[in-house]
Length: 132
Image 1: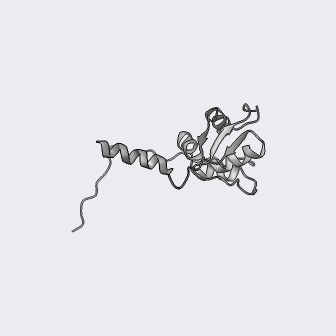
Image 2: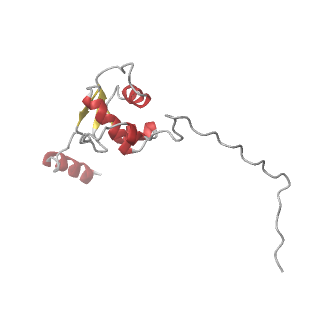
Image 3: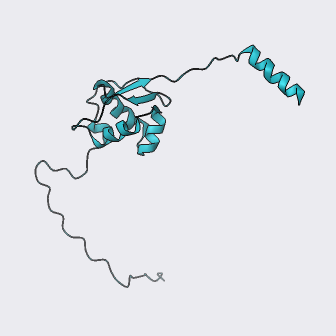
């Protein structure tokens, strides 16, 4: 005995025949990691590298570059830029590498705090805790 087969009340219409693509047309757009870069080495960027805009967006800037320049009026980390633009870190580094080469942005390493705290500060905290 075979189980009953369910049928749709309103069957889907058959798909429309696809027209062949003309020469030079592409079905899928290029991905960002393919569009930018041209195989050049990427800049040494990590998640906490600070980026600051050093110029206004030129007329030839891509939408991603324009968005980055508008966001970077104040220093922002690459991780923040990636989150704000909803783009992967690797894509943001490719775009930033091109912008660094064109001198549209500047990169700054984050400030590194002292690895060992100041002794006088630790003593002041200890004395304050003892008074409680």
